[in-house]
Image 1 (cartoon, rainbow, N blue to C red):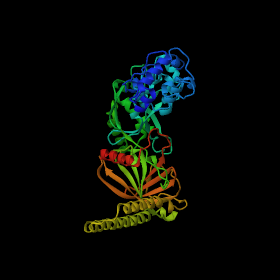
Image 2 (image 1 turned 90 degrees about the vertical axis):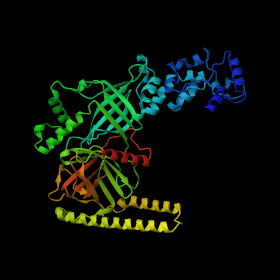
Image 3 (image 1 turned 180 degrees about the vertical axis):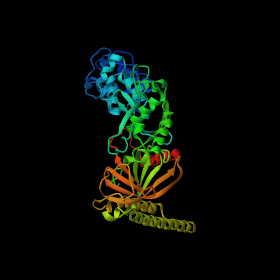
Image 4 (image 1 turned 30 degrees about the horizontal axis):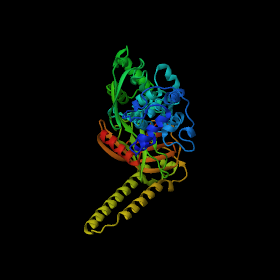
Length: 538
């Protein structure tokens, strides 16, 4: 601020006021550069001004002087005020919009320049990707500064990827700037069991600026069009939505019509098409439970997993088959010698937020030939041998840690921090290269006899397999336990998991959607997010 003030000629530097007065005297007018204390982004400018009127307003009707003529002949301008207003518009337009209110506090000249809509039009485009012809807003009396301050800047904290709190079911919401709207899109898996089909999506809410006073929030739930809603930012990385007209969610045919409509949208079929009684119960239970949240929802921020060159495949979001529960969304992330699959959507057995599978990248599996692979007992024998090996290694590792702790307690001079860091880096590097270094060429693959798969159209070749564990539990997440299984990597976009105890196979396919504002600011932020959603699920 002090730097801007000195450039302007009104700051605390010695002689600055004298220079400012002399300059105003040369211009033939009273000084208009008194400090301004306004800091609100909505007040940076305070009004709408046409681009071609800027020079006239600032210079009192005279043409803007050439930079060489702004001061005495033979010298460059000494302050920003001596620059042409058109050049100041370009300079101010290149600054982040959040800095402009501070700039408006410097003097009324800067404040007047910041009324220029060109500045805010550029900030809307560069910071939020608004590419529409914002000049059309002039018809409604809404300025680009209004769009920036009252819509984009005000609701910037809800942009990104979110998980709704719908009990065990969860969900996936992406809030984006779409034209002159901010829209919350709910992403839904394709209909079971078509795991390779594209994701479905529908709007849950939208925010737009209809008049200069404030932005309008509308609920998009139901089949009667947009209606009045409300959004509240609860705290950092959490917000809630509320519908103020829930009658728009109801149908004339009552709950039966609502259920039939929901079933067609959710499952792509009617209840008569579903012959499995247990599956019917699960579907009806989900409808009853999720219907309770049609008027108020809380969302918590989630991030896409960060990637590393040593990752087995690119981490991200996948659609997976989960038996009678249908298709669910799983986030695959890599953590050194481990890979984790975390549920973004869930079910009454394993709720959203829980770690559904864990892959041990340090223990690849050599599958038998195609004929022996059809024998489930042969596959079980191989996996259980590796499970026993992993158990022994964990015991040995725990014993080494205990011995090391005892030695450290008896020897005050422990090894230096630098040596510990070097050892940690070496371990991490070794873990990252383990999977790819041992990856063989593709090999034939077939499911063993007796293993159930919702989708029989799985790949018949795979790249590599690893030992892993899968989380199973009773209804209501009772008696959870991790059981052995096989992680099967088919290609860059598909993998599978064989649940030995359940004699079941899950096929996962990558979600190929470019989610906006979803990258984690750091690895630590992503790990903390995983811990938070898992603790909430527990």
